[in-house]
Image (cartoon, rainbow, N blue to C red; front, side, top):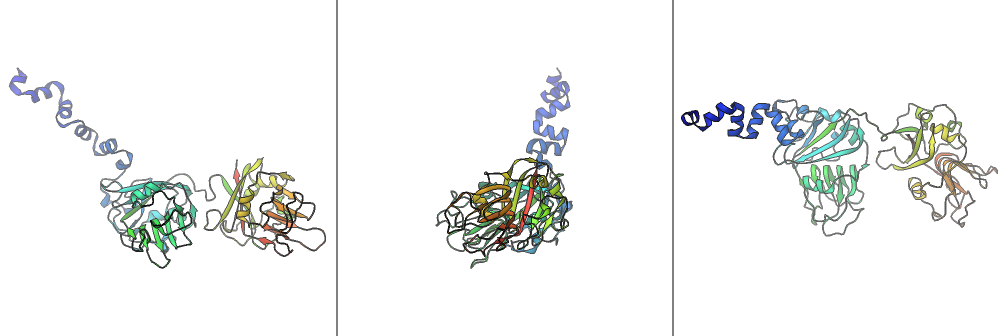
Length: 465
């Protein structure tokens, strides 16, 4: 009777209740939004990321436009070079249009650029994150950095984990998809065509074959090119993207970084700087007591600075299981050449290792060692007495970590120690005719004459087991 008199809808509401009726009439999605609220519904339907976007973005502080842990740190205007690669804003604390809305297109650098620590970045083109039409790519950094400023002030940082296809997706697909990335990473610069990107990679013009050493164009954020052309943009692709020199393209772009509670580890996870040696100095040659005692040296010397000998507290700490030697720059700096090596066993500290007498180690990568020091004319010969605290008996060559070899005019001889290569090197044949002590490099007899020792600024790191 009630159904007959009041109708089907009234009856359903009467029998099953208001909530059932609303769900029945308006649908599950409307009901969930009605009962649980807009934010719950956005989280349910679109996932965590969209739910984290504040509903009144235009009224928020620009640095808080996306809730922690993601923050807008920069935005780049299409067609503008205000944030191109060579602009000082990448490496200083100056802000730019910091009160502008983080949602509107334009050039800006916000306070969040100076804050951290950070462990990941996100690039969005065409629209800010969360808006319809936004093309975004998220990438985990090679390590934790104190801030975006710290990252972009650290010199070239190789990173071949960049997703090439995803980067083409947020910018533009190239006609030579089969070619690999050239010099991918942060603060990357090509020597051939002067292509430069604060984050991205290089490649070749379409008419050329794949060449892993050619930088016809740069793709990414903070780009520029200075080889006969000028293609400075905040984000996009530089000249030579096409066969003609008229192919630069740029997009409205938003740059975000993710903060993390993890502390930054400037030398990589678990690594500490134990010692550094100055080119031309014999202070940390093989015979120096600093290799085996508890005394420190210039322990307040900046970790990234060259030209000074130093021994830090980390030399006395451990246990340690790996060593890293870098020449021509500290780890993470542009131009640095580094070699990492697993120790034959775990040692209580670097001091314990260098106080252990001769430790033979034939697993040293000879080619990599030549790479961080200098290639030799007899590179086809085997290493002589490779290892730690190694001392030759013929020509008095010694090295705290390294190996020996022959002068170029001689044939290979596994018992000859004409020269030493490595860290903590020295050579003294007892005749008084030669004495080539150096913190890192190669000793006398590197050439057929006795006048070609070479030394380098070097940084020595150890990994804690």
